[in-house]
Length: 389
Ligand code: HEM
Image 1 (spheres, helix red, strand yellow):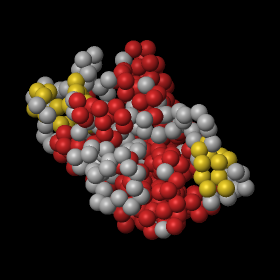
Image 2 (cartoon, helix red, strand yellow):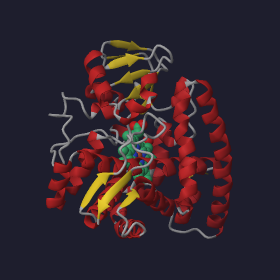
Image 3 (cartoon, helix red, strand yellow):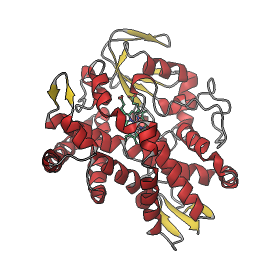
């Protein structure tokens, strides 16, 4: 699976996926013993059959960080229930005015310029500021959150082994201590004066009759900070890349802005911000004719499933009006992305505001964009663009 870590493949994994779906849709990496599933059918099985494919990666020897995304029922169900009310479509719809205000404020700082970094100046801070406010942390601290998340993201390098893995773990340990100190201060304030935010809610919550420990709240904080922005940042950045590569589709969207929601869905499918989700077999399992032993790490390659021609007609065409579009970019089943309504809202608002302020958008760099450090997410680290205001 080393190929998954190379810059070229992280920038454009799709030709590889196509080849693997044809030749070996279920593949075992001989070096690490990790299994990878590339076809839509197999990916859906791994996501839906949670009795056979669990989420607790510690069963395969990896740290689960105490994040409920890596828990199995019944604990998963209880922990998810604690915060799911903050992310219902209704609650999220109420956030739209604030999301728009933040988006406009950020774009105001680029006003009059004909070039800026649409990732660094816009797609990074927007979701970070929104998730910080939802959690109850000061939005102004967003650049510190980005630094922390970068370190957490690089934990994915541990799958690769070697010196990079050791470095990633050491960096995470340092950042974890820094986050714990930061959060302890916030929690002290909330204990004295609860507010209408997620941290106050977590402080008051009970699971099986007991309060959450500070360590459990820290795990929520880390997960939501990372899940709440890295993905949405990449969704916005990947939309700009896709529009720049397909000017005729951008023109179609500009001519008919009611296509914005389906354009966002198409970016999710075409350049999925999350390329792989992790599973662990809970017993011996047969998939695609392969016998996978219990406690194997399995990567369900949702980015590849979303280009599977057996599921999507003309899967490599970018079509802002594609319907139906039953992609699995947010996963499927009991771990379906809790933040889907929020990230859809953020992407619609961000892209709507960006398009409203620009007549043309083009990638500014002749150089290929630099992909994010981890193979299981897909997006640019920075993305300079030229715009005609
Ligand atoms: C779960 C993708 C935005 C919070 C997931 C999963 C995927 C995903 C694929 C399933 C993981 C699995 O099955 O193992 C995305 C994408 C996003 C996005 C593509 C944006 C484009 C967000 C946002 C938040 C969020 C904005 C929070 C504010 C979560 C949480 C889970 C999750 C908490 C775990 C749910 C569970 O295990 O029950 N996401 N996500 N995500 N996502 Fe997202």
